[in-house]
Amino acid sequence: MRLFGTNGIREVVGTKLTAPFIARVAGGITTVLTPGDLVTIGWDARTSSPEIAHIVSSTLALAGHRVAELGILPTPAVQYLVPRLGAQLGIIATASHNPREFNGLKCIAADGLEVPRSVEEAIEVAAEAGTVRAVPYDGVGSVYPVTDGANRYVEGIVQQVDAARIRRRKLTVVLDCGNGASVTTGPTLLRRLGCRVITLNGHPDGTFPGHLSEPTEANIQDLIRAVPAVGADLGIAHDGDADRAVFVDATGRFVPGEETLALLARDAVERAGGGIVVSPVSASQSLEDAVRPHGGTVVYTRVGSPAVTHEMQTQKAVFGGEENGGLIFPKFQYARDGGMSAAGVLDLLARLDVSLAEALRTVPRYALVREKVPCPVESRGPVMAQVQAILADGAERVVTLDGIKAFRDGGWILLRPSGTEPLLRIFAESKDPARARALADEGLSAVRRALAELPSNP
Image 1 (cartoon, rainbow, N blue to C red):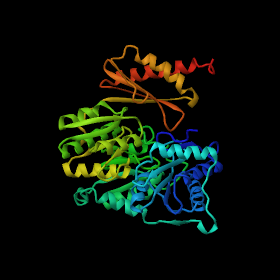
Image 2: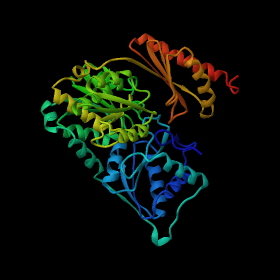
Image 3: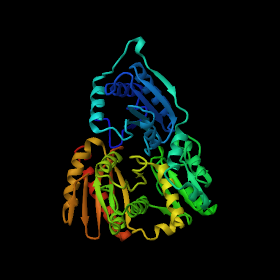
Image 4: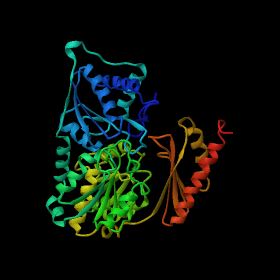
């Protein structure tokens, strides 16, 4: 029984994600721990997150564990606190950027990284069997709150940048918290860095009334309009659990995540005098174009932050991240971190004394088109097999590290199953926006044809 995707468990609340399901998963978690271990648990702002967290907390306490409840916090804040509190495991009730009806669980190892697949498999086996460790009445653990987690995380970020130099810039920032977990840390962090902060969607609300929790260009139109309207220097938006950050420049231009990744990766490589940058196979060609002139090398992985962070550790990379706004600063922690990304961009602008638009002017630009097509999990195999044959036909080069990435004349197209939703994701890129659009349409057509030809879709 496979429960964990590329970034934790994510299911629809009230269908598969029910109290008995959560209790079984929590019971499985008890089998990978030793009674007495300290476990931290935090959650995002989704409507069911506190209740999910409390089921997990109670199950672990009844198995003899001490459980430190951190409350609503960004995922990277929980990851930051796990080793600093001396916990053997961290758990986060979150579905990150997924639609509002989803929720889930994510497990963090003692070092702050996502647990390896072997631990997830052990939890899955125990959950399927209904196994749970139990202790007698005098061995029951405890659940207690930790209330200074947000401040500790914010202070940790502030120590990573030249806060005094950023304060001297007196930047005005519009921050879209997206009604998610960043409400507990984002405004405080920016004010600690001397920014004048204007917030949008700045209260926690799991129905996401402002916009859907993924900070795409279409979803953050209010931020895009607000930045030039108030004369702000830039805008920042986070996803539901604030492990990602996307940016808007002073003119109201949405900055694609691949540009931010290339900008900060180039800066990290240049300052280190060379080095390795790690990114998934979905990364834009702009990343290589940006870092190679400065002695940088890009190492590619499967999609998903666990693959990227573990490879960064192995390679001793100077930077890493994904094109969706999930950036990893290894000097701070091996985690996608929306708060650190915000501070990192402000630090770069203050150090170079430029605007965000000026900083991005020298970053290579490609047109990257993203599409997604609903696809039942059980249909992925036959659909992928059929589409792979179509995309490979006439390709200059094919990479199958994760899904299929076919390099065609003037660009490339990538098709892969989502690890978090019942979708197939399509990425297409070219210097020419029309060519990128055509490649994406080619992928969409191939997927739809394959779906239509399935036996269940006469």
